[in-house]
Length: 129
Image: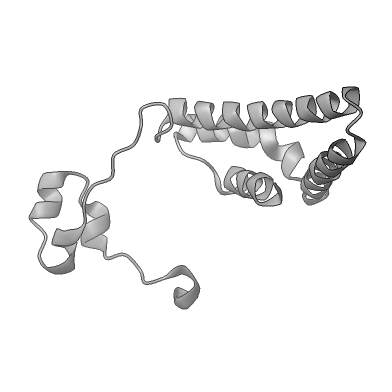
């Protein structure tokens, strides 16, 4: 299992939450730099809400594209996008992920981080497209 997930991160590195704490570490821990994130997409409830909003925007734009292709009589492109969209939706329904999505979103916002199941849904959506 360690080979698949990479080496385990030492506890002293995990516990160091500030730049000053990282600078006090000895050895490889001194080479670790703290990460910064954008305010709108970083950790916390606002970042989770933004990511969930982007997922809904992606789905809405997919449906809009299918509709536009059909109106323009581009049935080949409409068909390709529809098959991809339906495959993704059907696989998520079969796995039960879409049924749990509202609960996962509320839990993610409450915890300020994405839950494992919500990460799986996001990965599946991005991977299919």
